[in-house]
Length: 549
Image (tube, rainbow, N blue to C red; front, side):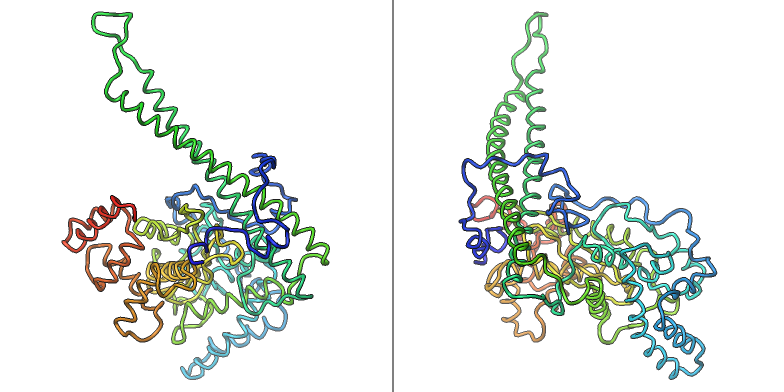
């Protein structure tokens, strides 16, 4: 079972319901590529589709060439900013204003501490009111309130205010990195599925609930099949391009010495090209067969989705939940915020110069995050990879940026429970930590642990990354949460061991080297640093020469 977690096989319950073993009939017509790849706004598949679809052909994050705008915007010099931010939110806004005044005017540190604590809960309740407006168009002060926690521009000194006014507002790099206002809008409009929470309860009878869950699984399989089909098509095009170049080399001839009308023989390089062409042709046949299988999988998944949609309609339509999507997602974000801060951290929810001490490179705005994600991937190239049908797919996670003073990033979901094949995980990053890189590394470590644990399933204490690490943990007779130990060791792995500074236990280093390998460039650098890394490098060479690698 552990080996099939990510293989995308048809759910037995789904197969029984549809009356099929999951195979496509041999005479079934293949789907038209135009129908597959041309998006249709009114199709059932695209309703609730993700904003940033997974592109399995992408091999990394884009290079960030401009982190800040050259000219600051004028929103923070608007004298009505505070009035607009609080306006139209009812009694809760008045309560926030009253407590805030008491907090700012208090002279006694004890009174100030009391008002500060009293301010937190009403402010979050007030933010919920603002969050409900995100599916529509909200004025900039309310947007920046959700995005940066900026209630009043004068809470920041002139230099910091100028810095925040240069942060790029739009997602020009088109990456799945969201500010809080953008995330709530995407969830509220159905562009992104709400996060998994225990609070969401399905209404109506159990049969309809079961049918809806099967539909979700089938749609996840459809999304995965579509992404894999695109990747296979692109792989074939790339191979054909290489083949075309190799064939072109064969037709390059030069006159034979002394004979203007006779060309010379094939060169040694051209003769080697014949062998390369043979291998490319074999590879094309293999890719074409895989493409054909992918087309059949997609066609079957499309049929399953259509059948289940009809059955859901027969049962009375799509299910609704007791709580609105934004309400539940906002509650989830509030839980995330607490986790990023910790019990002993600073839970004050407003951005002020009193608590903001980050430099430009340590502030968690989108461009900084994308740049650091690229840095992480350059060291740990499989950080965002998952295996699907024996193919290692790079699937960058959703990154939600929350304006808190926390120091720890977390993984909220390793993947969508209805689409383990190609859905994005979800990590949460505090925007104002002491060290942004460490906060991001802790989230990536959390993601890596959860993905590996889910893949190993019941055998997570015995197999793979989590199994090897847990067995070492148990042998050392350590106490506490094994995942927390792993996260700290991963941070050491990425910050110290990647630079050749040996800090980890020998067994842990071996496990990480095997299951979370450094990039080729890092390995080449480390092999010359010490005998320890040279030995690990040689093991890689030995494994690559054996069938078991």
